[in-house]
Amino acid sequence: MEKELLLSMLNDNKSLRQISKITGKSLTSIRYWKSKYELDKISNFICEVCQNPLAGKQTKFCSVKCKQQTTNFKHQNYISQQERGIERKKKLIEIKGGCCIDCGYKKNISALEFHHLNPEDKLFGIDIRKCSNLQWDKLVEEVKKCVLSCANCHRERHHPDYIL
Image 1 (cartoon, rainbow, N blue to C red):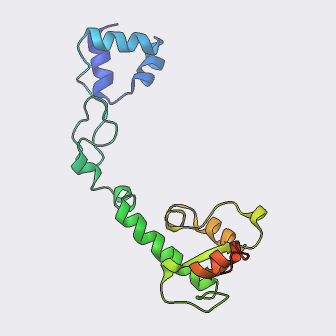
Image 2 (image 1 turned 180 degrees about the vertical axis):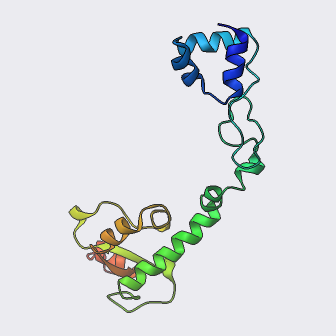
C-alpha cells in the first residue's frame, strides 16, 4: 500500500475500517502498513471537549479534566447519584401517602421503607441506589406492589413472632 494514499485517508479522518473497505485490503493489512510507515501517531479522533487529537487508547477525551466537564460525568458521580436517589425516594414516599401505614411515622425518609405485600411479585428492593439509577417508570411499577412502613413496623411485619 502506498504511504501517501494511507496518509491522505487518515488525514481525511477515515477510520481504519473505512480505509479497509475503500482499498479492498483487510483491516489487519491496514494496521500493518500504518505501523510500517510509522503513522501510528496520526489519530483520526479528537477530544469531544477541547478538540485536541487523541493518542494511545483514548477514545473520547484527551484528559481527566475534559472528561469531568461533560454533562454525563456530572450526573454519574457519587454525590449526584445520592442526591437524585433521595429526591426520587421522596417522590415515591409521597405517592404512597407520606407516612408509615401502621403507625403514621413521617419524620425521616431514611427510616421509611417499602414493604412488598407479595414477595413473589418482587422484582427488586427499593433503596437509594435503585432510586437513582433505574428508570422512573420501573420504580413506580415496583412501588405499586408495596406499602410504606417505618423501619420498626417493617421488621415487625417480617418477623411477627419475635415478641418480647
